[in-house]
Length: 259
Image (cartoon, rainbow, N blue to C red):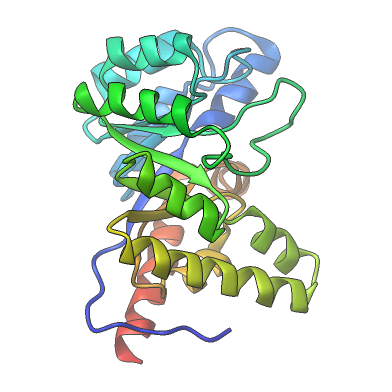
């Protein structure tokens, strides 16, 4: 896959999503494993922020998890949320560093697809404004489509997070042509977004190899990764897999600079 390297490349941050630590806890109930403990381990191993998605059905992260994360961790919280009155109220009460607006359907296993910013302009513009007025950095989780990226700029969101799921799925299934097409969309979308003055993040489905590849895109300044890290932690331990992921990202950035 070809990568175009610009003259300057900012540091690449790693946000670790602890949702699926809570998923394991909730299968049996009780307090273990504790997603707040996982967040602290991830930070000690090199995470720059912690992501947690408080779903409307509370299937993994719970309200008290968000409160404890806010009170106990030393790095920024990225609060993933649907753009609903309930979630906006919780965000305004909690005051996380960042809020990432994502689409949400009760029947989905995980977040499927990006926000339709173009089709929900007025509602999203209002939510974005309320969160920004409260001092919360807002990002929109969207596909790397020009129409959605341009709409994100119009609703005055300062950040987008590009949905990397289709690219990662194509890579994992060995669909080379599809993977190349999705890669071009991500690359071109990141370039467009940066040109519009948006900060660009990416996430969903990333593993060591795909994170190393995408780290070479200079427009992207943050990756948010969760399910893969929690899965690998079963075998290797959470602190170790965060360190390996951090190293993979750093290698990708370094290769791009050398190029």
